[in-house]
Length: 243
Picture 1 (cartoon, one colour):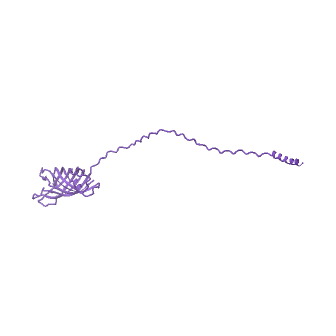
Picture 2 (cartoon, rainbow, N blue to C red):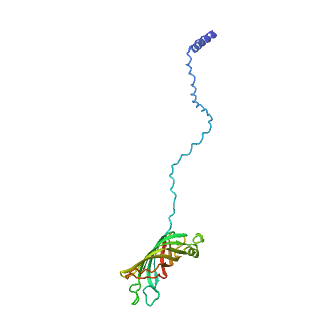
Picture 3 (cartoon, rainbow, N blue to C red):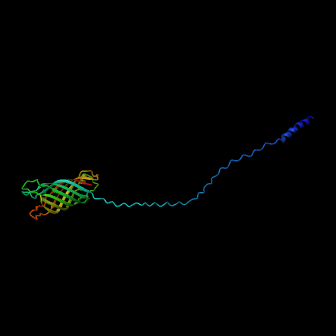
């Protein structure tokens, strides 16, 4: 009886436990999405390319440079040693004005000059000297220009480079008042220039000392003409600018 009762008690409970519904099963957890993989690019070896040709530059050809000759301008005073019209016969110094401009400061150059002397009013009778007005064209030669190197910047060497001789032609009007005579002749002379500025300066200031003479014949074509003999030395000093 007791066993039957226990079985009876256990039987319904076990049956109820077996008859109870099982809890629903959860679906499996989803796997995380796979990361997209970037395909490795395929590197194809290439032959080295030739460098591009250099660009052609259209540069205008520079015209050839021509160095101009150096110019010079000199203004100064001096004297002309004349004997024309002086009594008794003698030679006297007449104040004179000189202006010279030229081209070239090397071995050879060309100069053009103007010369004027004023004797009127400076002498008493019986002296009757003449006033002279002249224009000149001269070839100037400096024989030591190439013998002394330009690198020699000492003052003495620079002085020797300026030593030169003059040879050219001149035209003069010589007269007393309205009575005058025109004559032409050969002009010869010499010069030297004392440097006054540094050798490195592009423009040079110099003191020119010059002596010259005009060789011309006496002309006396009519009674009004003034017979004029060859002049003696003309000496002058001038400030010369070379640029």
